[in-house]
Each structure stands twice: as structure tokens, then as C-alpha cells.
Length: 124
Image 1 (cartoon, rainbow, N blue to C red):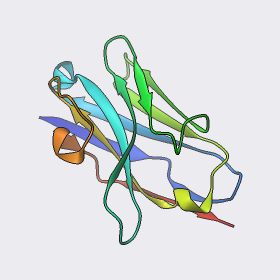
Image 2: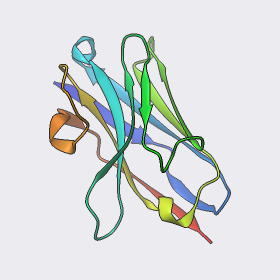
Image 3: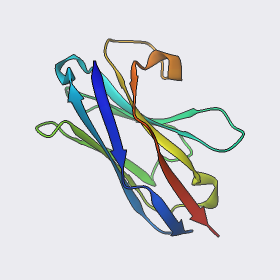
């Protein structure tokens, strides 16, 4: 089992920045990739970015490309999400999750373990 703990959420004004962290513990050797999702009130949970654990290949959805950056600290089993130029539409609970085997997509059900989520609120 993998245990994930997110931190770093908060409230910022539009145009501001935040950095989220996701620390993994447990069977971290089994992680194939880590991703970030977000869920706004009344909306489905949406995938926004992932990083492959070995090699560090990344994939971003268009809505965050150029504004968000995912990175990992392999030694600390931690993934970071640097968010810049934040918009009110970025307001959501942000979750990190792991894929523990190779899967073809990035839907929520294709991820195995989840953190508890951290709130990000962007005001205009």
C-alpha cells in the first residue's frame, strides 16, 4: 500500500502562485507514475498532470500547460506541483494519486492510491 499526504494549498489572488507537495510512503518502490487531479464543487474530478516515476516524463492537460510545473524528488518520494498565474477557475480541491502499474490513460479509476486532498482557492 502507498500512503500519500498533500500539503501547500491555500488562498491566493488571481495571478498568484502556490506550490503543492505530495509525500509518498509505504510501498513506494511500486509507483509507476504520480498524477495530480482537481475537483471543483459540483464537477467531476479531472486529471491535470502526471510524471513518470522513473525517467520523469511528464504530461499536462492544455488548461494548465505553461502555468503549472510538476517535479519529483526521487530520494524524498515527494512530488511537487508549482502553480503560477493562477485563475479563479483553478479553484478546487487538489489530489495527488499514484499509478502502481502501467495503464493507458489518466482517468481517476486508473490510479491506485489517493491523498486526502488540499484546497486551493483563487479569488479575482
